[in-house]
Image (tube, rainbow, N blue to C red; front, side):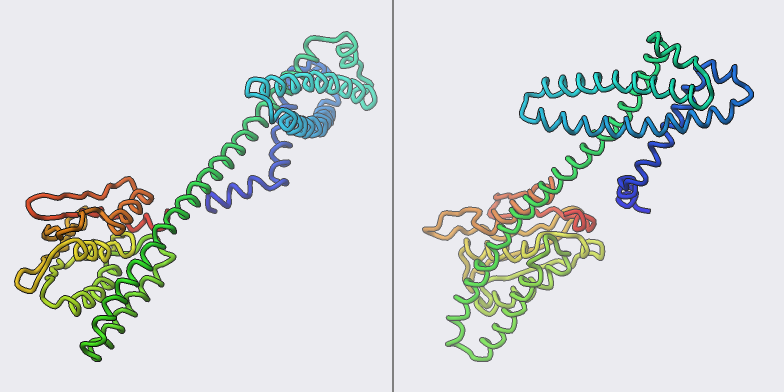
Length: 363
């Protein structure tokens, strides 16, 4: 049985009332141990003891249920009041109810003992407002109420925690979906621009370009509902994307990609992260056939490192752009791991943290 199934079982009304009956029966045994009349009446001791426990449990269930309903009523009536007043009204109301419950118990116990066992000891104690009987009943009421209150507030705390977690996840998912929606038009319109120039040069290359473009866009559509993908899946998509880059720029851009280890292949990262970094490098840097741009992708134990030559284009302010900003925000929503950006020694380097495979089920 899973933890969730166990919690659902505990919330079933039948389980709740069985637990109350067991608790109240235990309280009745404790109460009997302080009542000397049970020890003096040895002849009918067992029958009287069990009859008393039945009366105690029945009355206790009514008082318990009444206390819960009174608590809910007082909470609704003080919902708009400030914090100290809500607690004050709740405690005061329950204490008054407890005094009423104690007197009700004493009266019921007295009539029960007289009617069934012709025993007037409980009535003498009750009519004389015996401290032992009334105070004892009131203490047992407080124990029952405290136990019920602990369960009630624990349940509310659990529900509040789950609701807060659900709202946090829904908010995170909504923000993540907005970020992912930036990828589709950004990638698609850039690709159409490339295809427009290519279609006049070579029909065969145009056809192959369209085939590879369809594979890329199919990947984007397939991964639209995914927040994380494996490195192996991302690299497969990147190969199709790099084909499109090579067709357009020929030998002006050179790519070198290390072979990841078997463990690294199943590490996770946001979909299209590598493609967006490559696109970012192409967009912001100068390159030519006699002076190609070098883009490298390598792997360490904890990071995917994407680096390229830093050759800022004239007239273009070098910035993180949509692609890199998008990646950083997606990582911030998923994990505490930070995306590292280093600009030094003529190189632009981005370090993407490897994310464990188990994180996909949690996000």
